[in-house]
Length: 397
Image (cartoon, rainbow, N blue to C red; front, side, top):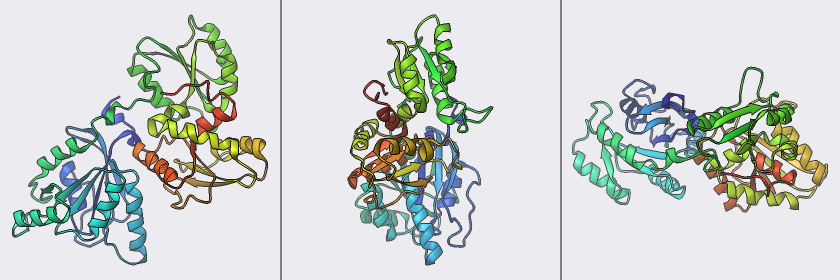
């Protein structure tokens, strides 16, 4: 896949944190070599986090996140700071931008380190500092001996060195993640059973389907596609059974009944559960379904902020199937996008979508939060396979 075609959710997210007027926006512009972020001497110019997809030399496609000042004040300022804290959930690499020894930054550094997010400390505005070396040493000491990169977004001083540090700081295996893993190899035939419903309107494929097809083509696999109602006729037309069948989770039972015995079976949602999160955590979370009662409460988390439809899997189909099994008293709470409760104790189970719009760091953060609070978490596709009684028969990457 060309870097320019890489979806934003598949790019490493590099976030810039710092106090107001530390020069975060100017630093982003200097690294990009273009005027992306609005720059002003007025404190608090950047309000909500702003994302920019870009090709960073030596790295490839990345997302830069420009955030509001950590020291913003007032009622609105507190909301801005909370938005900045939410941006941390999707951050693969953090740049802590300072112009003097840290204050508020120390608390944020501690939080970033707790989340195991790599951090680069940047001393900005060095063109106006009286004694850069002494200031750099003082900042490094306050930060516990971290390497501090002195730069000037205005003159370009230190920008090449900082860009090189970015390249080294990103996880080396970031681009090695695979949707289908070792389930298939070059020359294998893969059959995709894809829905044509309200989630995938006429003339469109949904993002997980597009990304999966592209990866399979990159792997030199032969790819065949059909809808569920054409599955039997499509299998009859093939000269050999598919090595792998990837289906929409909602038709698991029908596909399982019709598939050749030698063909492996999985779903787009299950593949993305591993690609974007922790498949083993979701697998374990599915066991909680068997212990639900009519007094249980389930949190349904959707990455997309789409308008619900009558065919919505998270808001309609899964609740219907679960109530059929557990009872009509089963309760559901729905959240979308970045909204996710800090306190998960009211819930007996979390059901998460495939998260095609989230990056991996964001999903893993939610899994870690659920585990820390002792709440099981599962993915739509894994839950559907469990409810269909075939979870032990499907495969994952």
